[in-house]
Length: 84
Image: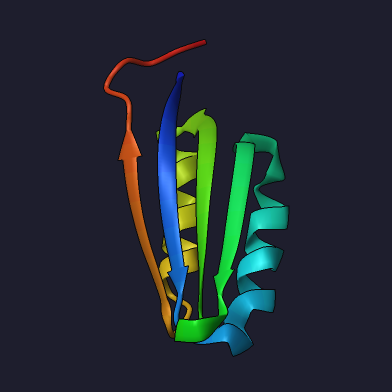
């Protein structure tokens, strides 16, 4: 299976679960090209954006695990073109 490039947006509404999010991101570090995290303290949320390069299965596995965490919302946009 070939790789796809994409952007993943993560909103953490329950800051207590940030450690779980970071643990999953660490597990999938091999497909993460770039990461930007912004703590929005006034609203008590954190926003993370990721640039990823991985197979559809890898990206889906990561977003699926993140989406199961209570208080975490995940959205992704992937290229239609597969890369090597």
